[in-house]
Length: 169
Image (tube, rainbow, N blue to C red):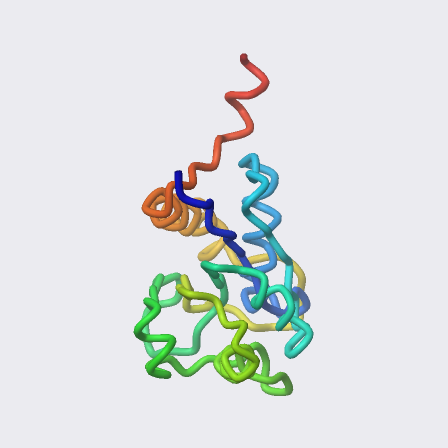
């Protein structure tokens, strides 16, 4: 039997800028709707920047949930594979004042502690006003992003059980 990979799920974003906080809202959604197995770590990374390195270094497989500034319809979901991340084929910053995700991964790699695989599931924000809570455009996308994440986790022999089924058993 092979050793179970350690999986990290990281939601990043600024809760004070409405849709910019999608990754953080996603972590709350995920933990309230699904039971997280022992080999999976989940983190609301907020805007912690370089402080996220230890969490990233502890994961064999890392998923990052964030917003992305690309020209597309608000609410559009974009996935970036491990190859996209490794080649720098994404342009993402946690916030204008933070060290970028790719920079942190490069630091982890220099320390020979980078995850074996990194995948990003990102969404185009609609509203970045100073306000708390997701826009009506992005709120329903939490379940859609969760479905994409669950599909990818299943490819790594990891199934998250919905919390509802536990109470009925």
